[in-house]
Image 1 (cartoon, rainbow, N blue to C red):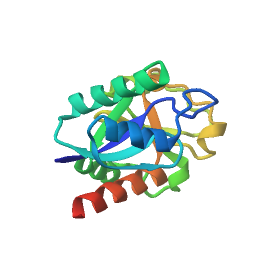
Image 2 (image 1 turned 45 degrees about the vertical axis):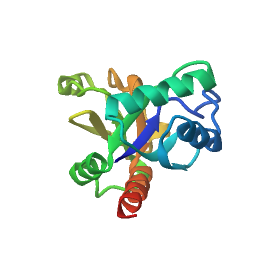
Image 3 (image 1 turned 180 degrees about the vertical axis):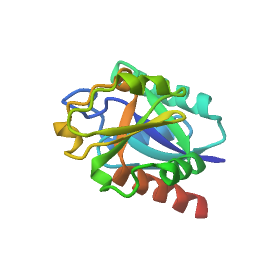
Image 4 (image 1 turned 90 degrees about the horizontal axis):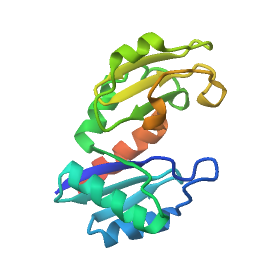
Length: 173
């Protein structure tokens, strides 16, 4: 069994993609996932399965599409991947609510950083399938422009640390 952290895109954000976390949990259980738990209202789920990453992501996306009317987009990471991501975060010393990590299915093109406009001193780093962004004034006030970010989903470090702890506890049994 593999423990996955699932990050749903565009769920309960700005009045779109409404999905109660109790429904998310029930849908995951109906799809055959085990040990399902959710965290806050932004589409975060931890579960275990014998499926591989692509199979599990596709199954969850299809299950959600049947329930919501459209597929929201699902990004999965294993506990090991999330722990490594947190350990490699170049902004880990910054307040957790001022650092967001954008998740993608495939590696993000690091040359996109050359086109970044960061008027409030934002910093970004590409590490594999993720883009780490430090927002000194907060994400909500940012005027950051970076092509391609809208195709992923973002979580702040506080949320990611909690999800990593939840997955670690599940693995520890």
